[in-house]
Length: 171
Image 1 (cartoon, rainbow, N blue to C red):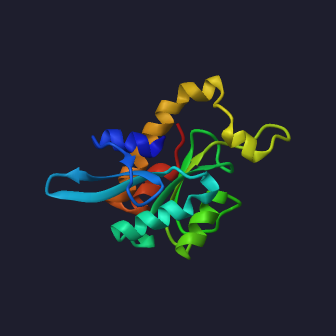
Image 2 (tube, helix red, strand yellow):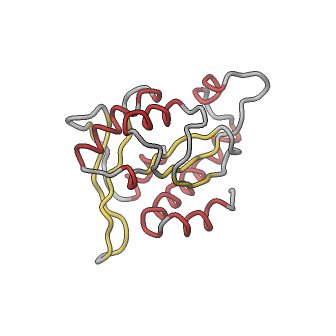
């Protein structure tokens, strides 16, 4: 949802990529004279197989792992909170595990969008695949806008500036 909103904000359209199982587009962010080229992508594979499409797109566009930003859900962060970081493990996230395995490194940026822990004894996989609660659905547009702003900040202003602006706040 964050990548799709980012594409809309940049007046771009995600379309089926000819060589990867993904939707993608090229766009630019910034101000005239200081634009940054960005490739946006949404794998069409199952989340736990997203490494293949990510690797194919990185190869196609010549993207170095150090310039990759993965936006993903995070159980260990409360809903409506996000954290931006570079590197780290997969923390049991099968999408990150697949990407790390496919590109042979964990050294890439992550925008971790909090979804919170499952209630009671609900399985995490069931929780992340279930619909948002009515309260969460009301907050979701703001969470997505906030996440898009953080992603744009990371691209334009770097990690430290983005962390100091976004890691310390929740909506």
